[in-house]
Image (cartoon, rainbow, N blue to C red):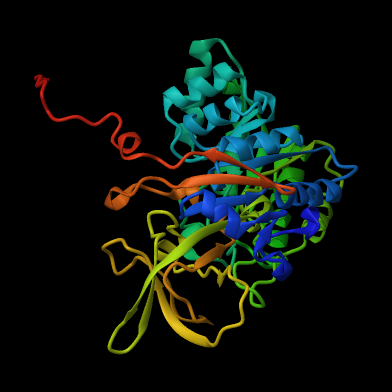
Length: 427
């Protein structure tokens, strides 16, 4: 048996086990497709970042959008990790999982007045403010509640994160944050904000970043601005370094940044800063801990290619169709078979329902169990019921044990809240 503390989905020895759990046996008990997450792998990632931050006044706020499972959030809470939220629903989930409000930060460009009010009433740590209009709304809502909101301005440093265009957030043309010039005006006029304490800076340039250079450049620009503000009397209590650390989606191709090297870049850029550092990792903490287990429905032989048709689809895992993202896909049978080439597809009626094209892998047969790796982030959290396919189950694995942490939706669950138009009204 593999040592569960080292059993991650990328450990070739771990197939057909992850975190001490036999995947073939698990898939006999739980109908595929379903997500499985290694608690040990998540703990290891949390610990690696916490070790790198020893001696630093720092708070890790997990980006809930990566995987919003209550079980995953509860695991974060148990290890002292807070939450980075982008909606009232994520606030509700984080609080429900036990994460205290003083470890929650609220990001995002479209916070509504209602969401701001809910977060203020919950007494969260701070807001990462993305526009002047939002700053004025925060002031108005906080004043109406008689509460002083703590806020950080999200800086857009105009740095290319060298990642996919759809997950780049730090370029001038992106919708996130404001220029340093605009932020400078906010601080110059902050005395007019009676119910907003503007005393933080925030930067997040994108996701799935595999080089330290974009981080180095972004933090350099934020550090210059922090020193400028301090020099003219604006005390900065916290600097939020965001997230963005990349993970390994493709074996032998992706080379993620080491957490300690990343933290060293932050320490170097912000040398002399005596306030609190915040970090917002999401993908880094959970992506490699998760797999999507799926079975082969059939092999379809086309005129020019072979299609491997799975029981999972784009509604279960959107990343390949949305980002042309690569995920390693491997059989769980553990047998040595001849290699062949497949287009790996799902049952949804879209050509975009394709996980891989011309992918070389061992020959498969109907009923074979496969795992799609590195699906612990932006898998279940982005899933839908397109084609009226119920949301799949999620399972937490932990040192030889497993627990179903979200039941597969029934058809009745899927249509809850729907009804024929029987009661007509006029507006």
